[in-house]
Amino acid sequence: MQTLSEANTNLTELSLRNLSRQIKERALVEGFDKVGIVRPESLYEEGIKLNEWLSRGYHAEMAWMQRDVQKRIDPREVFPQTLSVIVVALNYFTPVKHHDDSETGKVSRYAWGDDYHDVVGTKLRSLLNCIKEQWPEAEGKVCVDIQPVMDKAWAVRAGLGWLGKHTNVITPEFGSWVFIGELLLNLELEYDTDRVEDHCGTCTLCLEACPTQAIAEPYIVDSNKCISYATIESRSPKLEPVIEDNLSGWLYGCDICQDVCPWNRFEQPTNEPRFEAREGNVNATLSDIIQLTPETYAERFRGSAMKRAKLSGLKRNAEALLNVR
Image 1: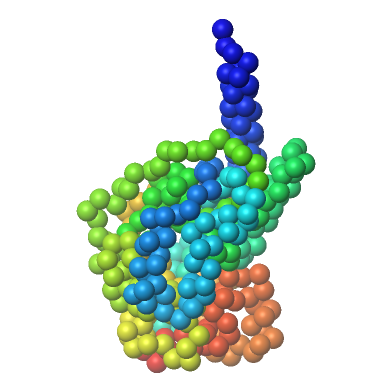
Image 2: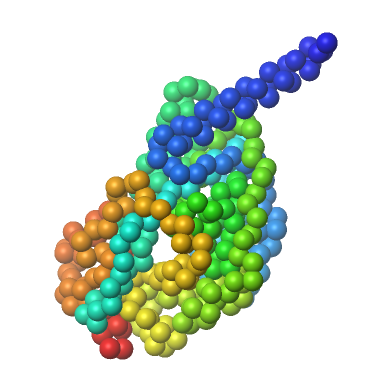
């Protein structure tokens, strides 16, 4: 016979399992494609790699990466009550292709539709509200890229995919075309412990395809040489020669390393209509970009991730493409 202590332990385990199952099911109802739950721990190994990356200056102008390093390593520094990290992935692939046109500049696929911060954040807040309705004691914090949380590291720990050599998380079902978010929750749940094996193997297509050799070595990107970083994050009035000479038609961001990845042949169209490409966001007409005013810029890119580059950045990129051509 079970002792009372053993019975209580089994009941607790059953309750945790049911609670975790219900939360995962609700996450799928909200539209997420993958979900995992992990214990909030200090990311020791990932923290070592982050500090090494910073020490090599690979963060370029992103000075904020050096701030709050401890918060990036431990989610309990972001939300002290954290007892569980719910990690979600949302497929954003839309079956549209760029076209080569000297009058236009290519836009990274992730920015074709509505800003993913808004889409993923809204879904996570809805998930949190549903959890609170059933468990009033629940409290949580939604994290979508902006917060100092290592999204990719948590996605790997939650078993959503593995970190590819291009440093994007690759999922077996959707390739790397996924957005990642977290819900830091004050409820103890059943934790997932299985991880996805690294399936990159001996493939080096992403390293070989990068026109600026920004992938310094497998799993490490030097932002100073990254077209995506330069055209989105950099606030320099002029692009560095290594970037400008190798733009390969990119106005905003760059998908080259993902486009060549063999795992992205498993791409599936997203079920999220807000990721459908807006007019002019797959290939943007360069002359239109240069003629934008602060008012027309704000109107055109309202609710778009392309605002990240600022008006000055987009004009700089467009001028660089026209100069190269």
